[in-house]
Length: 334
Image (cartoon, rainbow, N blue to C red):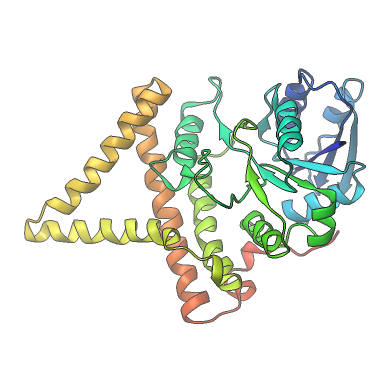
């Protein structure tokens, strides 16, 4: 089995440097290649790639901007491997990652897998708080955090693998973003392919974003879900509504205070106290515990409001997704 690591990058040369540096200390001794796709960047990473070209087997490809999904497809088309591993540029790869993936594929082969994400001690406090919100079982990130209680795992494209055969038959990622990864997973299922979580194959996901960017990101996640539900109604779940129920319930609990009804808002207070305690213990920091309350609040409200807006436009009003939310769709160029 020959791995091709596919990494799209857009204006992030420093991130690529860290990712490539982490691969130089990999314990995987077999030959593999790294394919860097520069997605129309104005701050290119060609110098960083050249710097590591004597340590790693790297190829560099510059293309017009067409989004991360199309860039991954481009990379898989030019790659030489028979199994593709896809990373986001803001990931740092543990030295055992490739060995763990090979062991999993050897023991129980699957044509598409996904891994979880974790935080390094060197990450900022905000990054650690956002990581908690995106991975904890207390939030919508529980599945991404490594839950193995799913019969069908939907890999996320910051850390996933797909066989060349499955890519060629499915034609890879669609032009929606975000949402291109669950879209691909569902199409693979419908073609008879299986997906699986590789619990040991985690990456350190740095997420170089601030609070505003995080809110925008999760809002887009919320908008994408009803679109996917309209495409694949058989895979819609009640749990997708939870963030919106959380938001509506919070607003109602505030209104109840006008009538001196305290129980609903106390339930929310108990939940946030639980978030604070778990995050503080996990990160060994009271400050990160407080920041996690902010992160979780932004996660639920961003996703929940985005979901409600999209549900109204897509499910109720039957608007075309590309017209309702043009910001979620890239024009395919590869």
